[in-house]
Image (tube, rainbow, N blue to C red; front, top):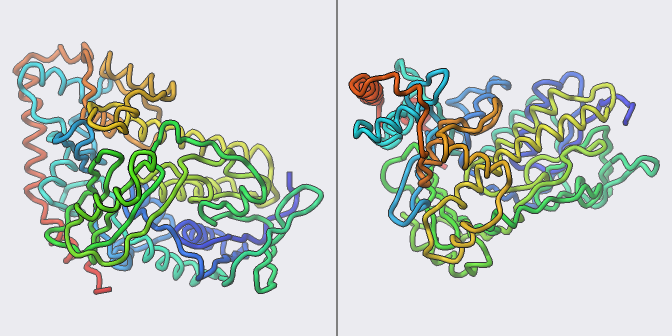
Length: 496
C-alpha cells in the first residue's frame, strides 16, 4: 500500500500507448495532476497495428475528439469487419462483421432461425442477414442516412501518435526527450521513485505508466512481475510489415489471408495500404515469409520491409506497486483481431475509474488486474479458435494448430455451439455473440441442432421472416454511398 497522494504521473515511453494515456489523463485530470511523458526520438515504435475495433469511438467521445478531424489527421478509412480468406480451407472465405445478424429473440439467437432455414432450403448465407457484412462486400458506407452501422477505423499508427501528442501537449502534458538510463526505487518498499535519463536529468513521480514496448523497462526489468507465455497455443512469433501504394477502391474492411505458416493482413488507408505477414518462425524462415508477402502485395512497395519479433503472452500483473503497464509493455498476443489498441484503451479507462488519488490500495490494484486478465482470457479464446477449428491439413503449421491443447473455456464454447447452437458469452465480453457465430460458422463449426422455440414458426412464416430481414438490409445498403465517395465528402485527408 502506498499512502501518499498521487500528484505527479510519469509516462515512460510514447507511441500509441504513451500518448493515448497522456491525452486521456490530461483531459480528465489535467487541472489537478502534473503529467510528464518521457520518450526518445532515437527509439522507434512498432506501430504495425493500423486496424481498430469499434470501442475506440468511446475513447474519442470521452475526449470530445472530432471524428472528421481525427480521420483526416490519421489518413483514416472505415472498417466494418474482416474478410477471412483460406482460414477454413484453401479457397473458402467468409466475412466477420461488427454488426448484429437478423433479429434477436429473447430465448434464441438468430443463428437458430438461420439453421432451420438452412435445413429447409430457405436461408441465404448467414452474412447476408447482417447489414455490416452486406455493406462491406458491396463497398458501401455512410454515417447517418437513417442507417446505423457498427464500425471501426483503419489508421496510420504513427500519425495517430502525433495526433494524440498534439492533444496532450495542448492540455498541459510536459514531454521530456531522452533515453531512460536507470529506474530508481525506494529501498524500503520497492516502489518506483524516478527515472534517470542518459543526460543526467531525473524525472520523479508518484505513479508511473510503463509504455516502453516489449522490453517492459519498468514493469518487468525493474519490478520483475513475470510473464505468461502463450506460445503453446499461438504459434506465430514474427511479422514483416511493408506499406504499398493504394490501387483501386478503398474497401471498408481488413483482409486477413491465411497462408501455410500464418496469415497476411491488408489494410487500406487514404494515402497507402498497410501490408504484413504474420508467421511462425518454426515453420517459415524470414526469407520465405518476405518472399510470400512481396509476391502478394498489390501496388508499388513504398518502403523497406520491417521485421518484428514478438513473444505471445502477457505480464502476470499489469499493475504492480506504483507502476501500470500499457501496450506492448503489458504483453502482446497477435494482430489478428486488432486488439492491441483496444487493450491500451481498456487499461487507461480502468485506471481512470480506479485512479488512486489518495494513495494506492491493494483492492483497487487487484480489481484492475483481475478485470484485465478476464479480458485477455476472452480474447485468447477467440484468437485460438481461428487457428484450431479448421479443415486445413495442407501444411505442418495447420496440422499442429488442429491438434494443440486449448483452454478449457474454449473447449466449452466449442462444444456448446456444436451440440446446441448456443453461444457461451458473458455481458462485457469484447466480441459479440454475432461475431462469434460468424467466425464459428465460417471456420466450419456447424451446430447439430437448433433451439426448439424456432419450430413455433411454420415453414412459410420462417421463409417470410428470413426474406423480410434480407430485403430490409438490401434496401438500407442501396441507400448508402460508395465508401470512397463518403470519405471524400466527410473526411478527405490532405496529401502526406
